[in-house]
Length: 402
Image (cartoon, rainbow, N blue to C red; front, side, top):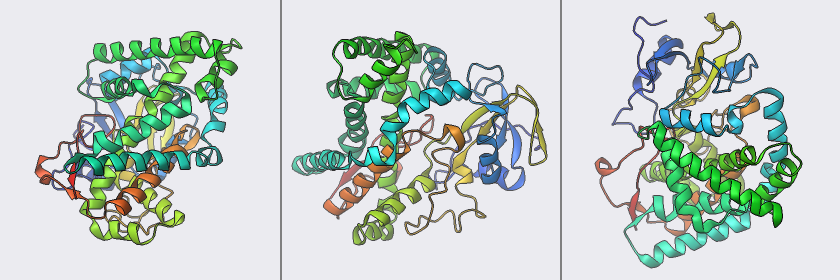
């Protein structure tokens, strides 16, 4: 354990906006399990190496339940969200398993693949609009945000006409700048929105996933109206900010690595595009504040005793750059086999929506660089603003021209 208890998360290096913070890399190499201080003054164990993180995330002796004493909350806003509307990712055991099984069918690779033509149509339409408007365009608002927002709204059966409200609320909830009260207001508004929509689905069902959840969970008495709304809320929010941030930051990374963008243009085969997306997910790791757990009993990891009630953080941005797992980890190499990255987590809480995110990213990156081969930044790198203070890392805007 290091003598000093550093603050987490740590600042990134302005010279390398894609890699993990230098101090985090140092800890992985010199003190892979160490204590860090969090925003609220509490401390937690930081587990930085790939194998140790996999062991942690697959161990039922560590809980994802944010209500347990000692759980290391990531920010005031997310703490407020989890307290007011428990999402799937904060549940354990049978409760988690039952709800996950109720939603899994809609997120299998086979089910998601049926959406590919619609996602392709959506992406082509947005790029048509970008080209018609002419340069300069902000790819965050013109492409990165609308794609996942429209797809998750269609999948759930939620009116896309309200997408601006959803996007704004999602930003409030994941931002480190938001207060607990601001997040609570956003969550309460969204929860009531989804509760009223549940009532509408109960009387007039449709083919959307939310309607199916209402029929199988709410109308059967398995979940209350408020619990059903919380489930719908999680699905709605999860489909917005994460994929949007990955689209924007991935596009910037490809612009900064023109040889890799050219590789994507030259080989648009499904296998090559899928592999490229996995490498971008590994290289960027936008969920940069780590997956968080609290020990239910005394557990030893790599010779370190984690006592019951102590919080643990597993930041995958640094494990995804571990040289013993990924050769030349700081290089962006779209030919790399990177699917074993930990960007979507590991174990029973691995991201339910990963197949949908992968499909959206595949369609966007392959289509964008094929249709606009001269795409380039419209401003110097120094003018780009990053979401360092958000639970989800990314860009606030991405001005491009062609």
